[in-house]
Structures are given as structure tokens and as C-alpha cells.
Length: 154
Image (cartoon, rainbow, N blue to C red):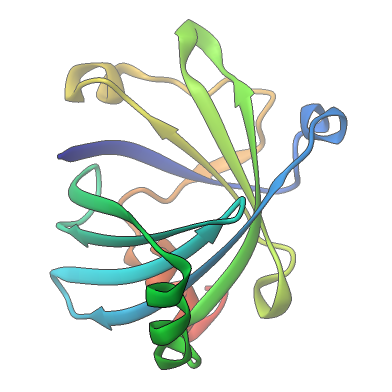
């Protein structure tokens, strides 16, 4: 399934997230190259394996929930390529959801806003409200989570 998403680096976390609980997300990468990523993710006591391909605005994504024993059996293989973040979801304009990731550990201080869109036209027309002090990083490979896990904050 295609995922149509734009990413923005925020200078700080928006004040709206102070009133909502965030969700801890742990991700580790089993395989990656220039075209494909295979990752494990733990989120809210559930475990997932995800394959992503492509880059920038439109990426193919396949995700399946897996049992803990599969996650636990593979998690150790990701030990050198992991990230942790706390995710907050707030309502954006036009019925869009804003996912704000506050990174932890060696990526502490990094704040990324992701917006998923129903189609490419909507994504390309979207303007982030000015109150978000942000730069767009959708096309910047350095802000892919796998790249952050390997190299740290750009």
C-alpha cells in the first residue's frame, strides 16, 4: 500500500502535546539498502514488522502485526540500528492528523512532524500552518528513521 507523507523538522515541540499522552515507539532495523527497509516496531504493547520501499513523498509500505516471540527472537539483531521516540497525535487542518515524534536517547532534541495524506494532490497543496516553526525534510534522506538510527541527527 502506498504511504503519502510529508515530514517537517520542528524547532521545538508544539504546546498542544503537553495535554495529551504520548506513545513510546521503539524501532529496530533488520535490513536496509537504498531502496528497501525491513524494521521491527514495538508500540503500545503490540509488535510489528514493516517493509518500506521508495523514497520521499510516496513510499510503498507493508506492515503486519507479529507475536512477541517473533519480535523478541529478532530484536537482538537490530541492536546497532535502533531509535526510540515518543509519538503524539493531534488534529491538524482539513481533518488531517499530525504525528509529532519527540526522539529520545542519542537523538534527544529532534522533533519531527509527519502528515499522511489521502492522495498526492492533497499532499502537494498542503501548507503547514505558520505557527509551526519548521523546515520541510520530506526529500532529505538524512531524516529517514533508518538514517537517523545509523548516523544520528544531521
